[in-house]
Amino acid sequence: MTEFVATTPGLFPLPDWAKDELSDLKGHQKEDLVSGNEGPEITAVIDRARTAVVEDQQNAGLDRTVEGQLRWDDMLAHPLAVHENVETHGIVRYYDNNNFYRDPVVTGDLTFSGDVAKELEATAEQADNLQAVLPGPYSLCDLATNEYYEDDAAFLDAVADFLAGEVEAFPETETLYLLEPSLVTNAPGDGVDEHASEAIDAVASATDAEVVVHTHYGALTEKVHAHLLDADIDAVGYDFIANHEENLYNINEYGTKSAISLGLLNGQNTLVETPEKINERVDWVLDNTPAASFDTVYMTPNTELFYLPVNKYQEKLAALGEATALRAEVTTA
Image 1 (cartoon, rainbow, N blue to C red):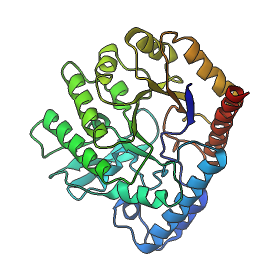
Image 2 (image 1 turned 45 degrees about the vertical axis):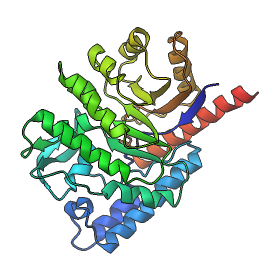
Image 3 (image 1 turned 180 degrees about the vertical axis):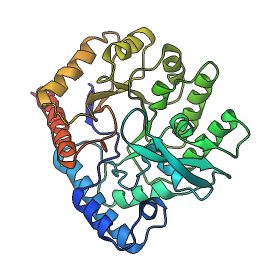
Image 4 (image 1 turned 120 degrees about the vertical axis):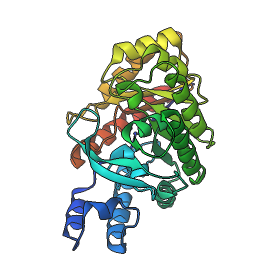
């Protein structure tokens, strides 16, 4: 019997009250928030905000709880942006939208940080169905500038080793979502596609959790998809909002893992899908992949949710939780 799991790719919008409190702190600058060395006043606000987003997920009835990544002002670049051997330079557009991040320039060895593990440890005190969220190694390289490692291949290996070391320090988690939008937006070419899969495999091997490589902003090319399936991961995530036909083609033509992550809610649009609409989209995928048999179907927004106003993000979580609850009712009826 297929298990349907409601979850998200994380990166939630910072609650409005937390934005106000942070802006009111004397001398507060963005650099204070993302430095990794926040003072006690800033830490206290973030701790309360983390509790709020954990409660949002619990109230919505989600099956996995993420930390929310409320400190990640540099979005997926955050794990490098706070590293001691990385300098943050000019502002760069975050993929093809109106969000921006500071260019992380790697100037030394990517040694162990532990920054994300601390966030997860705090979350583990409030939730027992923990899901970790990290950028995948290929996307993190794509978002960064290398001024230290010999070449692109060595840089990708170093980033994969760095992420694997971070994952090894995580508390026990049920799932790890590796977010890899760059596999779509800046698809690796011949040779690099296989190397990217090997780098993902290296990170996935560092945990006993179920590992989902969630891609978005479109569909993978055929070769990138085929190489990704060679990685020892549990599921690939497909963005069925941005490109449902090509994602469906990849699954039917090349197969996929025994679990699958379906991007079903639009993480960049304030229109809130109904639970019925979400389930219609699940059924459409399952009905149109007749050769596939899934042990687990992760139901999720297609992208991170920091694009949304807080009230819309909360409404989307509620719709997602209700959608999986409805599926459970039908299954047990």
